Length: 132
Image 1 (cartoon, rainbow, N blue to C red):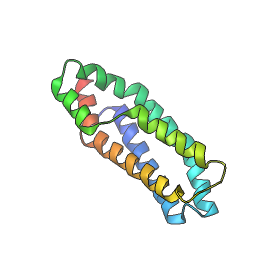
Image 2 (spheres, rainbow, N blue to C red):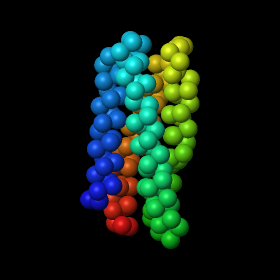
Image 3 (cartoon, one colour):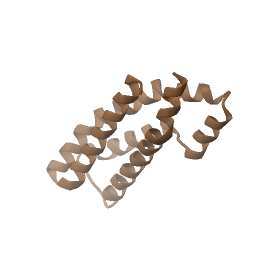
């Protein structure tokens, strides 16, 4: 396994642990909100790194690799979309205001991140290592 993929997997564990801690503390509690806001920069940095270092390699290879192209399409992974969703979530709630949709939006964000992580770790990272 490449050093980059090992780094990404380690960051995934840290992201999920952070978000799980937010859930345990309660997203409406001051501690949970503080932990959530502190996770913002780490999460965005990770997503940006993947968008710059992982997905362009996979997309380029998919141009000549129908199987990989199908795999990317099957997962319907739009890395820029998830980054945009994360930005919007933190833009909406970083001021400390919450609304009735805050819990739902957090759960949706958590589920989206879990799905992306699972897809990446179960197949896309292996594809990346095979290319490199």
